[in-house]
Image (tube, rainbow, N blue to C red):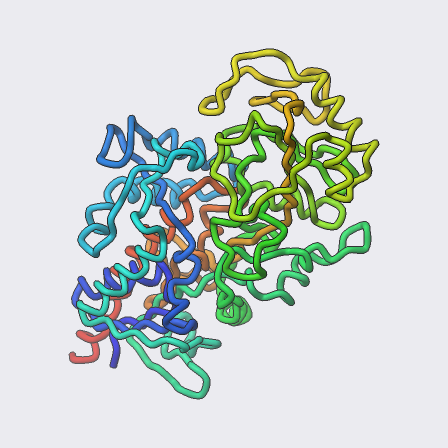
Length: 467
């Protein structure tokens, strides 16, 4: 019998499998996707948020525990389990040597990459390279991997895991780690969660999925129906404003529009609806998908002028360009006079200051609602460029409640041999909001905890069986 069964194939699953194998357990991974699409959402990532008290190789200055915690507290609005969050934060400070031993290489933050040189360690080659390195290491260590093996249900005896089912095949194991992601690719579940708005629209029908098409939430739904304790709101997610021309699935990072803080964002009525310069983009980019989802038609436009060019990571698709604002309004199909009134009011409200897109500067608006708190420069230098935005869901936050042991809980009781890691439990730390790289921090920390605990559980069961 297999000691540890890992359900999933992304970062958290791989960290669990590697750690369990290092602890001496036999390990089988079941990945729903074909080999070419392995890695879940982790293939689309590029960095890990890391606590550090002094400069370290690819990280500059310091990013101490308390600052990391305050950043997380701010973006979640307090909807986070502090004990589990601090566990993740502390683990992020020591994990990189272990990652390197498994073939992951790091590089400094790219210029223009969301002001992350101090807080985030970037993977050389991105998330796909990280995933491939982990798979190579897992296979070298003797971890068995099966592709195109989605698990729709598991067999339980009370709180104890017994077996998983792949179609009609029953796979028994002494312990199990669930790391199969959320339900962002389940269009029906998204529609159920988001419902219909006051305009009669079903907002989720306009959502694009930045992540993997294989995260349909089938196993998550099974676990919730089986009585596992839940955590999180089904409408909360890592949701980014992305290019409206992005593909339905697997758009990844390259579809994100990063110029929001350098211009203004308007809805289809030509009106601004939120403070574009509230804070640094790494701390705010993941609220914009939800903001756009609340607008008419779940669409918005990010508008910049020539002064912003070169100050952000250029998107994959070119924007709509025009040499005058009326021409831009017509090209976008937006109501010309309302848009011009919005831009005129914004330009008039901008107060002179010392513009610096690398810090929270003093360029702001006055007498305008909503305010723009920082980086407020008039939109007045042609050519003007606009990017159409739609909500891009990366992963959902509804998941399984857990604790510092990563155990799945039933009625408050921890399972003795069933564990959870990654996006299936990220809602314990992320009740809402997001800050760049923290998803990988959560998956890495809890993947390793789950793998270690699963190995111990399996070894204990094997000893008990032998006795």
